[in-house]
Length: 364
Ligand code: M6R
Image 1 (cartoon, rainbow, N blue to C red):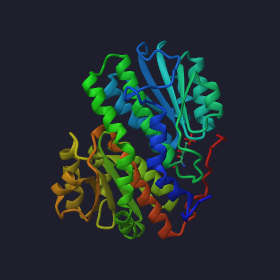
Image 2 (image 1 turned 90 degrees about the vertical axis):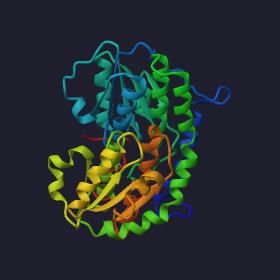
Image 3 (image 1 turned 120 degrees about the horizontal axis):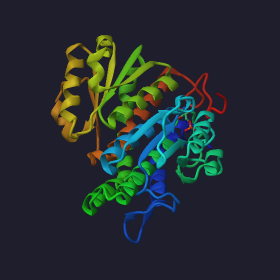
């Protein structure tokens, strides 16, 4: 049941510190303190290229992983939406690895894409939250997320568990390929180990997020912007808001704003800026200033350092704990979930069962 929560979605958001921890422990060697995946029967040192395929929020998990695989494991990684991948004739390399990400493990397009990749000679991994699902049975290897049953149609805890699992897979791949030093691996692993407690801190800031929801609920359109792994989080924020509050929302790479979408901005448009203090902070910051110069109502998500930088300029700030930039997308996923949730509650929509949507899309 929902326990003391008014909706499954809120319960599932609040379960995240626990289930992220469970997922993490399943890929962790307590004796050595190192990431240790279950045996995969796939030689990660021998793969030439990675293709990640999924739908919806799981696709945005794939997008975060693309940035990670490239930067940390120094391997080329392509991403695709399953309904596109399955009908495209992508040339796939003989030593390619294809990774399919799905909460349910039953999404028809992702399943068809998995079959297509197998036929094309790819090694396949399924990352699923339902271990007895069709994808889990058909893939060469399975990495289960331990999010527990997710009832709300909006995916929340399954997403952050996918991210933490993918982060571990990226580190294992980097190690197998000799792409990472022991010291760097230790830094990234420590950053991952902190995620459950940092996620709990993010949830402690829920009231401040809830306080902003009334403003967003008034809007007709909302933009989300971010760079690097903050870009898929911007897309995820927009997807969450659309699907449960029915407010039109778009996510953009912050650098793309001036190529069109900035024309939408006036003083009725809230712009959510995903801006952890990382190597690209200044770039995102200047995009935010461009938005403010056009009257856009900026809601700025950053850590103490980033928020100090902005002073009183933004309409509002959401302060998150400072974390290593590698794990920032996992933490920044949470406030965009909470914001969408509180806006939907104000709008009075059916949060757990939004109109026109099904939890698992098993028809094309
Ligand atoms: O079960 P899957 O992860 O394969 O589902 C994919 C999408 O249908 C799903 O993530 C959908 O986008 C969610 N409703 C988003 O919150």
